[in-house]
Each structure stands twice: as structure tokens, then as C-alpha cells.
Image 1 (cartoon, rainbow, N blue to C red):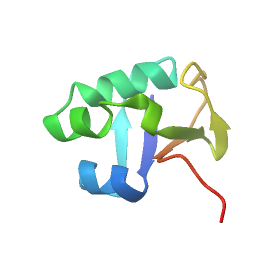
Image 2 (image 1 turned 120 degrees about the vertical axis):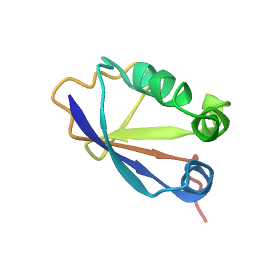
Image 3 (image 1 turned 90 degrees about the vertical axis):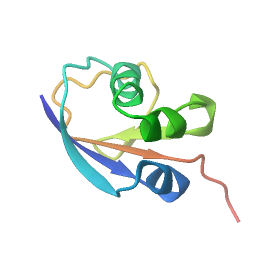
Length: 83
């Protein structure tokens, strides 16, 4: 499947882009993150501590075990805080 991946804040800085389109066979968010980690060192660094990132699938907050079936977009970002 083809997914648009959006990166925000320090995740974007480490990966080096704000958006990319990827071909993936990942069934879950965790599978996608594992695929990304194995691509290059910059991805491995960005996703070395998964407790420091959150995700949304098609603009809905999701857990790492969320299915990517029929998904079009995954956003990856640091935890949000209020203020």
C-alpha cells in the first residue's frame, strides 16, 4: 500500500523531511515504524525510543498496534502537552 507519512517537531528534524510517500507492506503502526527504522540511520535515531513518539492514522490518535488497513496517512510527532 502507499501511505503519506507526516513528521512533526524534532521527529521532522531527525528524519530530515516533513512529509514523504512510502510503499509499505506494514499491517500495523508498529510494523511501519520498524520498516522505517531499518531504512537509514536517521530513521533509526528518530524512532530509537518509541515512548517519545505518538502517532495518528488518518488524523485520529492511534496506538502502535493500530491497523493500517485502508489508511492513507500516518503522522508521527512528540507527545503533546497543554499550556
